[in-house]
Length: 94
Image (cartoon, rainbow, N blue to C red):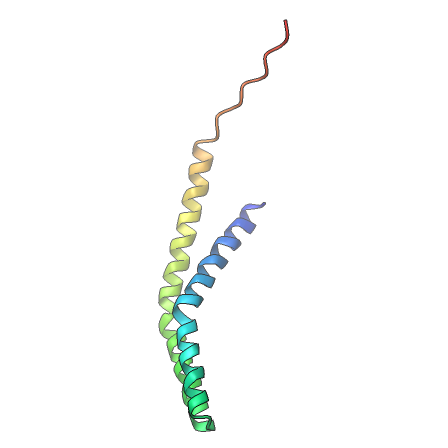
């Protein structure tokens, strides 16, 4: 795998985790409230609340992304600084 692919995978994992823990509950709550009161006014109100909740979580998600990026870069640098030990060549038959 390329370094760019590894980085993308790491960032995607953080984003999925943040979305699952921070935004899905707000979407579920809005959906339940819409089901309980299926009016257009309530639909608009719940959609706005989900939008506000998403905007409020933005900085936290951004911080998590930056932390994940820094961790990934540090891991790559550590791998470069300490390469795995070389395997010894097989012994020649006598």
